[in-house]
Image (cartoon, rainbow over all chains, first blue to last red; front, side):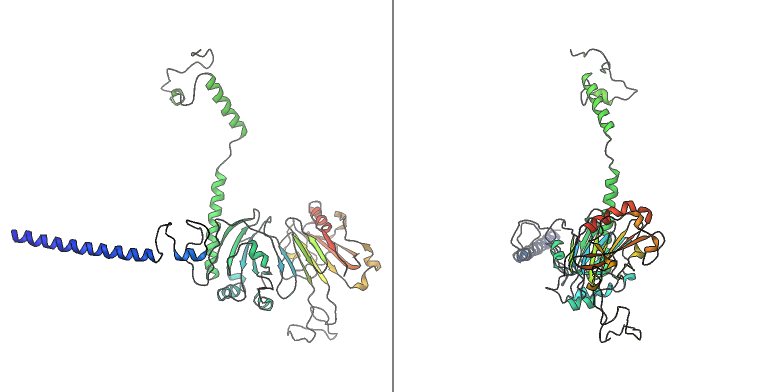
Amino acid sequence: MTVIVVLLAAVVALLALLVVGLLRSHAEILKRLHELGAGLDDGSATASAAAVGAAGDGPRPGRDFQVMPQMPSPPEREGFGGVADLVGTGPGTGEAVSLRVTGVEHDTIVAFLSSGCTTCQRFWDAFRKPRKLALPAGTRLVVVTKGAEAESESSVAKLAPSAFTTVMSTQAFADYDVPGSPYFVQVHGPSGRVRGEGTGPDWDQVRSLLGQAGADTALADRLAGDVVPKPDADAEREARIDRELFEAGVEPGDGSLYATPSEPAADVPPAAGPDPRD
Amino acid sequence: MRLDSHGITTDLPAGWEGRIALRRSPDPAGRSGFETRSPEGVGPTGHPAEAAFPVAHLANFPLPGDRGDFGSGAVDLMTAEDALVVLAEYGPECAGTPLFSHRGLPSALRPDMFSGSALQRAIPGQAGTQIWCTVANRAFCVYVVLGRQANANRLLPQVRSTLSATRISAR
């Protein structure tokens, strides 16, 4: 019996040493990771965040995550508010172009592309086959590149899809706060509100992204529609009843207000007559 | 929203967009491979020796990329609530001639000026009008198409507003 107890004690001691060693090793790994800037808490100043920019403490929406190589990160802002109509020139034609994006019936997907970026080439190719794009009904696709001072106009003219309007406008990149190409913004025409924005490696992913954003917006609109404002007449009636009850001595929270018909409250004052407290 | 090109400037009213471009000229050497010319040398985009003048398309609906000078390709897409204004410039030799004797852009378009027979391409329900004029010593044809003639009273204020916000400067 004694031998068994001694053996068990030895095993327990051995296991305890093993656990302590593991915990110490784990702590060492966490310490090293923390020194490398991979801490999980917001307060840890990470190397990647510091490299993005020095301004601002705490979490910064849209920037504190990694995206695929060659994919621009979303801009540093909570929500986008710079929707603007598009004014620029047509590539290779010198045509002056103005496109209405806000205050119109249709939605617009603005595709910000470049003639030089590798990823953009997939979108230029995809836009040559408009039937395969499966654009939502009532949605207009507009391709925007930077102006001739930043783009090769002849290259853009060669890439421009015939089925969609292409506008060269550096101002549009600034208006829409575009972080880089490719980038997509879907605008709700009647309100001028952004329904979705972002990027992806190919059109299927961007369409999925924008579709999800559109579904979220539609749901929010439906839910907002269920909140029916109280008519003025109802509000006035409610105020009048409250006033009369108060004048009759029934104050907010009075037990008589919650009595069921089968249990009439004993202290219900008469609707008319002198206030018993007078 | 301001649009300015080739001496045509317009401040488009809400809901309107536009394009101003020089009419496409054919390749003089015929190198494009797309030109099919008549024996007289006239191709789909005109004669190589033809001088190109600007055409402005202003509309309260999304303009397609492929449009003819007088709106073919765009009028096909018009709904009953749509309107299209075309400003097509002619050669300087036309300015001040009897056909272009009207001075300035038209400002008082009335419903009775529109007719289905004035359309460059007849589409049931649509109505159009053409007015030739001289502005800043430049000859223009102002061609207006309404998506539905019955809606003229509702659409013409927009058209008048667009034309009144349009300026032509001398060459």
